[in-house]
Image 1 (cartoon, rainbow, N blue to C red):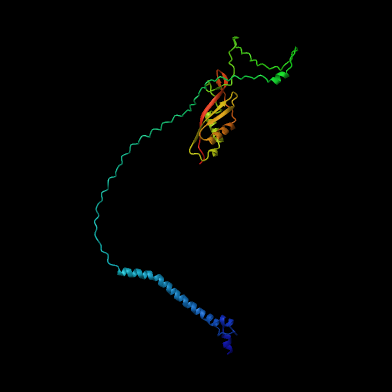
Image 2 (tube, helix red, strand yellow):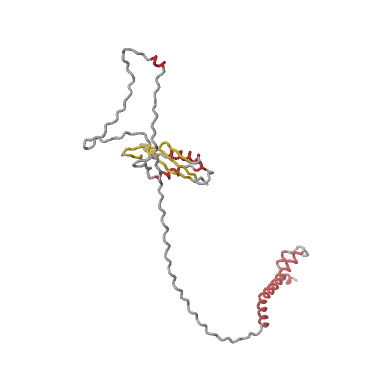
Length: 275
């Protein structure tokens, strides 16, 4: 009996469940687990082998059921090679002629010479009787207020000692001159400044392009005065006058007979309202 005790090698489950209730299901599960694992491994291996072999079996069955092949003798016929089609080169069409250049339209400003009108004679009325009675009369001379008299400068002397004829300077506004007024950079530079400073919000809602005729007087010192705009849109006219007044660049004054004169300048103006 003592030898049996020495040769007895308890398993891990017996050591764990020693002095415990082995009737409880945990002990039976742990002792049956290796057998169940081995059984599951064998079943899984058999199932895997069946899946792997089934395609081979299916192919073998198809080969056994396949009909015998019927061999047909076929004679090859020489195929004639088609001659390549040689495309004839297309004649190059001459390039289209360039479109004709449009000649730049030059603005023609009509200069209308105003009909001369005789200035009305200004008559100074005599002082009232009360003022006449206040004046003192007597034998003694009384000094009055001296009015300065304008004396024109002497005419320039030419190299031969003959005085050149100098025409008097007048305030007449000319519309036809020998040399017209010019804006620095030309009329296109003036139009560009007008377009940059024009507030198109003033004509918002207008139907299509708004047009008008602008006229102003270029003075002898290059400044512009008497700006007028004629057009059907009053808002456009007012904004055009404001825009032209805001341009501070001086013009080159017009000349007639070598003298600077006042000149009436006219040009059309058109603006597109904002969308």
